[in-house]
Amino acid sequence: MEERKRRGSLVGPVILIGLGVVFLLNNLGVVSWDVWDVIFRLWPVLLIAAGLDILIGRRSAWGSLLVLGLIVAVLAGGLWLFGATAGTGRGGTVEEIRQPLGGASQAEVIIEPGAGALHIEALPESANLVEGVVHLSRRERVARDFVVKGQTATFTLRSRGEAFGPVFGVSGDARSWDLGLAPGVPLELEVNLGAGRSELDLTGLAVSGLVVETAVGRTVVTLPDEGRFEAKVGGAIGEIVVVIPEGLAARVRVEGGLSASDLPDSYQRRGDVYTSPDYDRADERVDLEVGLAIGKVTIRD
Image (cartoon, rainbow, N blue to C red; front, side, top):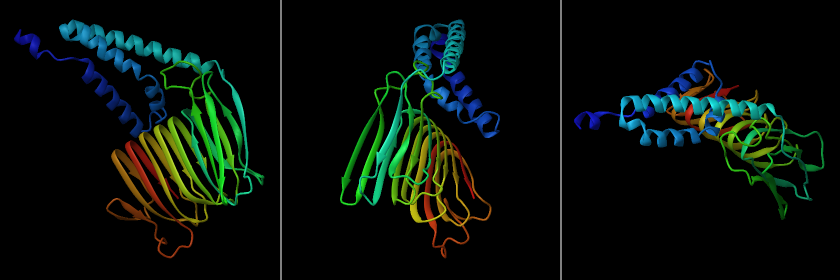
């Protein structure tokens, strides 16, 4: 009885060790932070592991070893299905997005894909506020909402109808949002992505405010080279890269629990705030707040 009470589970420690190995490989540059997108999609394996551990693993050491073997088999099968699904290509629907400005002189744009890949850039000269193509899974749809109050247009684009799943349906690579925004229009932009990759090239856009959140995955934001604005870029697990173009001064606050940070050597540090040398005198500047719980933050100029 005493021996049975002292016997612990092997499943929990092995999972923690495995996650630690992934973090180490991320920091060493051996694997990309995009691997967390796959891990996020395979989260039901953790539920299976917990159930098998309660049912079998805690009865004996051999039971724990058996559970580990079963979990490895389930994980391998999930990864195989994930790869097979990704290889099938785009199996869902495609929607074209064309939203006119509607006579407004400024805009607020809110973009909320569920998961997948998101790419945003400036449009060539266009009468539309937003243009682009959205590739959806079979059970997914896009909800649109456009309202003009006074001189301000508010356009919301959200994913609906697709719950997060491990490997079923269209793969993350096949679910993509490729959007362009109107240049020259004062713009407040808000982006929220559940899991995947975000690439925002805001060069040429008149950004007056920016909020970007990615729960799990990699986020790359290239800020505009003109304007005076505030920006927030955050996430839970993954990698955040913010490119500050030449001519744009910056004051950067970095907040993170277990995240590493890499900023230009020329920035002056005071606590968790980093300031470019010309910030106080600059006409074009950004107040940037970056928050990441676990992962890596890189600021490049």
